Length: 213
Length: 213
DNA sequence: TAGATTGTTAATCGATTAACAATC
DNA sequence: TAGATTGTTAATCGATTAACAATC
Image (cartoon, rainbow over all chains, first blue to last red; front, side):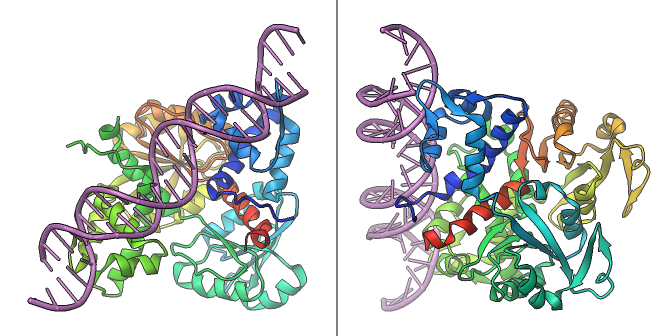
């Protein structure tokens, strides 16, 4: 069951992009694609595409290329998108509310099942069809709904406590939007989305654009 | 003026994280820190920290370490955070509105100067103190306000057009939230924030957590 | 069959880590 | 001065690219 060769996270990070490009090809009716064609669309090397895919199996066929639909589905499976991830959002501030209204996640198998906050003036309000729940009811909620992913959209100061609490309750993954790193917990995977960091690297690129070119 | 050795983007991507940790040290009054101490806090090697910093100059002192305040400021300068980046947001949907209300950006030198949409029912409404402007007034706006960064928070289908238009008007950087890649334009730097991608890699990690450990 | 394109091995390139002389 | 810690060179490690035999 356990694969013997360790797959680097560099490869994993590229999978969603492959998935996206294949989804587009699928949508416009392209049946097959070679690593060469895909590489020129995506601006990567054909060699890298073949190496990446072969971490997970031989999806292609010599002389033909890859079947778009089946490769798309295979990558989705590798990413675990068809396993139904129940997702909760912690923090009903601007960002939390935006994410709760953002339907695209559901398309990719992340089903929102609850939104939480600790602010009495927010609790009981609705975001779309979701009532904002009291964070202090999270223990009971976890037992009944068994979410595996929590989106952390709370202020920096609250992030560590929330993460600890969720880790203790058996959450499997955290998508962290707080401007802070979250401690590692056994069995809890973390992905950070630091918007400020992206703005900063963009700023660097702008400042150094002339120098580089 | 132009530095001779090419600095890899791997290094650049780590700078905002250094900046954040140094900011925290600064906030709690720590005056100096060694690469060793910082490395154990950040979970990286001391060697990497020293290598990274030395891409930009010798900020430390043998036997002492680094002065927190001056290193913090230096990294901020390297990132170009003190140059005052006027920023606009394109798209006043859930995400655009959340970002417009998100004050943290201003703290780091990204000053919001305008929010745009193409939907007549939104144009004229307010987000905080910002009136949502008609995207068709962007040409005149660019001339008077000279924003250098645009946050793209429009639906996928509209992203390419918006980017092209802004590129033509001389925008310097795009922070792209759309679920699509944006074409490269001469003189326009792009940073992507693909939230779906982060959820997908998180999903992968969850699925493969048992196998890996 | 001939042409195309994969899967995979080998070569290259770059990034990370280790080591240590320099020096505060 | 002795101890600590840098800046930097050299060694290692891993990721990317190139090449090509296998084969559809």
